[in-house]
Structure formats: structure tokens, C-alpha cells
Length: 390
Image (cartoon, rainbow, N blue to C red; front, side, top):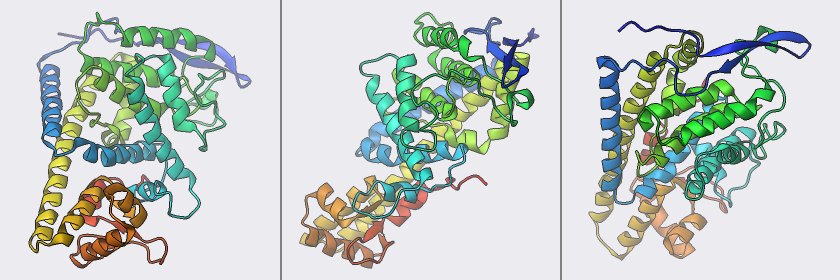
């Protein structure tokens, strides 16, 4: 079927920053011309749905899904923040979360840590709030709190014009709707998110809403991070995931030029199918990667537990406790391990030394008072593909 393509909004001429510019005002959802679910797109939807289902089943087979979730959420926070230009590593974040480790926090790590707080806040709030402008603003406030964007009105929709690319609105790559149109735009988006009569399944709605949110660009800063969290919230609220383990930031990071071009093609050509195809491919590959990562982490933990159990003793039980605690937090110190396991500080120190001798952990600091250890094989898997963008 030939698609009658046309732009998905209108350009408005208005004055801002001393010049007349064209701002894009998107049409409300759902798309005016129904999405063409021909056989290739339908197959993508089936494949993505199957991968999501397999991810859901896989998490139930883990000994403790929350252990995996702790580190995986932090990996997502890192990747999402890297798209915005941060240069932190997963190790930086895990060290930052250790209260006993001295050192001045750097701006990049604060931004990543804020993303963790925002995601956890949004998921917790879903128990009492629908996905709404209020919830989105609360998530945004957490993202920018105390960071370099703290002066960009955290938790408040913008009252001035923003733009994407270029040094001013007049030479920008894209100019979102004027501030005076935001209330209506966000109200329409909220109505669509909570519309029980949507013509599309929740997975497709997540793709539509992500496009719409990024096009509205309602905040002065932090729109990308908020929009990526919104995907997770929608899939989780729809019951497509029993645990929030699907994150598209790595896929967007690795395909960022195509990602931006496809958002543009929806605006200018109404090419919803190409954007949804890309989004569904991201869901499929990301879900498959999450299953693979969970299986590899579990295999590493089981191999290392067997190594400890080869020489059973009273001490080995404590060593196993420490190793399992480090599978949740693969960078830690003795005080944190003592708290997590209930072992005395001296016992934790002795057993950590045993794990060092077995080659299972590394000491990454050498101070007498603040020794920090890494479960390096586990951390290496989590850190794959998390190199900062250059």
C-alpha cells in the first residue's frame, strides 16, 4: 500500500531572541494517517514482543533479580548520560555511591547518579500516580538536582524558547514549539498516554510517545534523559516487563545519527514506519542483550562460587556471602560489605583477602583506611560498551 506521507505538524513563525524563526508544532497523537503495518513491520513487532517476553521469563529464573537490577539500572544511567556528553565510567558511579570513600564528586558523576534517582523515583511513583505531566516533572527535577543543569528550572516546563543544534534559534537544526504552546501539547500527550482506547499496542505507543515528547522538548535541559526514562515507565506500567530491565540508551548511543535522522523524518515526511521499525529493532536487540548479560553474569558468579567451595571450611561460607554481596555492588569497601553481610569488619577483611588470593577480587586502592575492592570479572561484563562518547 502506497503511503500518503505528509508532515506531522505545522511550522509557526514567531519572534524570539530578536529574530523571526519557524517553530514546529506537532499534531496530536495518534498519527492522522494510520501506521501501515505491512508484513516487515508486523514481523518486527512480533520479534520485539517475543524478545520482551523472553526477557521477562529470564528475570524470573535469576536467583535474585534485584541483585542484577541494581547494577543494570546504573549501567543504563551511565549510557543515557553519556549521550548528553558525560565522561564518567561505571566504576566512577559505584565509587561515588560509597559514602566512606573520600573525594570531591565531579559533575559528570552527579549527573549519572541523578539519573538513577530519577528512574527509581519514577518507578516508585507509578504505584500512586499515572504517567502524567506531574510525574514527568518530578522525574525531571531529580535528573537536574544539584547538577550543571540546576539553573535550568528543574521540574518546570520551560517559559522561554529552546532549540536543537546551532548557536541561536535562527540557525538551529530544529526549533520545538513556543513556550505558550507547551501546556496544550503536554496535556494532549498526557491524555494519549492514558487513553485506554489507543488504536495501537503499548509497545508501539511507547515509540509514538517518545517521538512526541522529544519533539515537544518541554524543558530547557534534560529532555533526552527524561524521554528515555519515559520509555521505561510506559513499558513497565503496561505490564510488558515485570522488572525494569529494558533500556534503549546503548542502542540510541550506538545509532545516534540514525536516531536523530528518523525523528526528523517523522516531522518532515510523516515517516512513522521507519521510526517504529528502528524502535522495535532496538527493543529486540536490547532485550536479547539483557538476557545474554544476565546469563553471563550468573555463569561467572556460579563459577566463582564453585572455586570457593572446592576447599570447604567455616571461612568459605563467609567468603560466599561476600562474593554474593559483590554481585550486587561489584565495587565496595569493607564497611559496606560488613553492613551488607552482617560479618564483623575483621572477618570481612580476612575473607576479602582470601578472595584476593583466589584472584576473584582486586583491590583498586591501597590506602590503609579506605580499601576499595572490585569484583573484576563481573564488573567487566557490566562495563562492556560503556566507553564515553568522543
